[in-house]
Length: 229
Image (cartoon, rainbow, N blue to C red):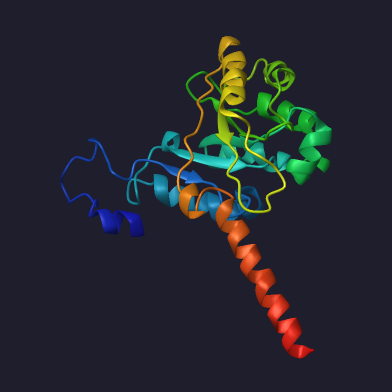
C-alpha cells in the first residue's frame, strides 16, 4: 500500500484497472521464512488479492520458501499463489550446509511434496532458486542431477550468481561455468534464466546487506566488551 501511494497508482472510482501497472507483482522473499508466519502471510495476501484491496491476481504473487514441507500444501489451498523454493544443492550433504532446514525435511521429502502441489502446472510452474557457488554446487554433474531430481515437476530454474563480500566463505562460480550449467538445464527442457546481480558495487546485493549488518553488530559487541574491561 505504501508503494502504491508513492506511485500514485490507486484506481479512481468507476475507472477500469486492467491496464499495465507499475506495481505489478509481489514476491515474499528475504524477510524471513514466510511459512513460519503462515496465518499472517495468508491474511495479508488475501487483502492484496481482494477486489476491494490491492486487487492483484494470485498469479502475480510468488511465495519463496526454504522448504517448510507441512505448510506447502496449505499455501496452495489457502493462498493459491505461485511458489518458489530456495533449493541450492542437489545432494543432502551439501544442502544440509547451505539450507539447514534440509536436516528436518530433506530433498526427497521436499520434492515429494512439490510434486503434489495442487496448483503446479505448465502455466504455474514452481521456481527453483539456485545460487551458484564455485566448486560447491556448480558442476555438470550437479546440473544433470538437478534435472533428474525435478523430473515430472513443471518448473523453471533461476540461476543466481553468488554475491561475494569480504570474508565470504564461498566464491561466485565463473561466468562460463554458470552458462554451461544453464545450458544443461535448458537442453533438458527447463527454463534456466541467469539473474543479473544488482547493487553489489555498494554491497547492497542479496546476502550482502545481512553480512554488513552482522559485521557492524560484531564490531559493536567488541567495543562494548573492551569498554567493560
